[in-house]
Image 1 (tube, rainbow, N blue to C red):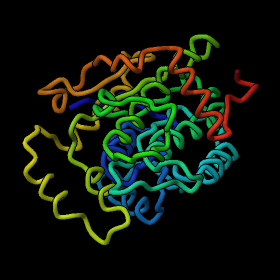
Image 2: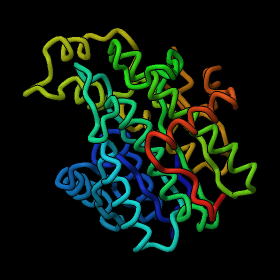
Image 3: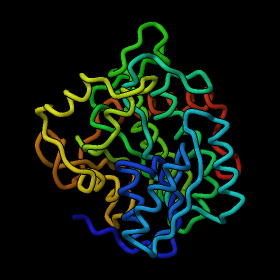
Image 4: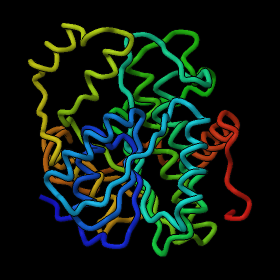
Length: 309
């Protein structure tokens, strides 16, 4: 198991910290000495996760704060609140996401839910927090992508899937966008001489509630076919302890590199110890990455703060 280096004195923000890889990352960062802000959509669930972590690690320094990545006003409120209370932010972990809602749903701002929650929300959060991040001695931004990014395409002519919604390609697009965003942020850091390390990770096939939570949106319970698909899925899968390690390696390893991508090394890239993996070709074109960045600025109304550019 990956041993997270000493994080004493560091402040981290982890989105989606109440369950799955976010909760595991929060626990292990806190166990290594970091003070962790658990950024969650439902504070009651965040407090329950906090209590579970404290039961295992009584000395953990944890704080629950609300953010809804599907609501740009909520993203602004979170960033403004953190900036008012903290002098700097050492580590931002863009972990939260939604997968495969049964029908086309939208965020509060009218974006297709997966593109809005998985990409535009984290994009806006990162840019709003950037002055705080760059005030840290060794700032770090790690973004969770997915193996689905390998199959993604950026449909610039229909980013919101208004013509014909297909949940799986829409998810793949959102996760490819995450990776392109992470790569472009790393490029900007180099161009501007920022000491910022931006990289990405994917968890392979890790057993969390991600696969069922999205499919259950708008319904009273998880559809039976989804439960059966999860139970009898022939693909190799792994528990959250190992599945979170690519994210933790990317976010804490002294050997982590800017613009790098980390994932499982085992069968089909779905399970196993962490290694440096090749990102999909579509995430490596600087011009397309810059185009997506400009598009995200236009859609969110959030751009690089002039005093850090």
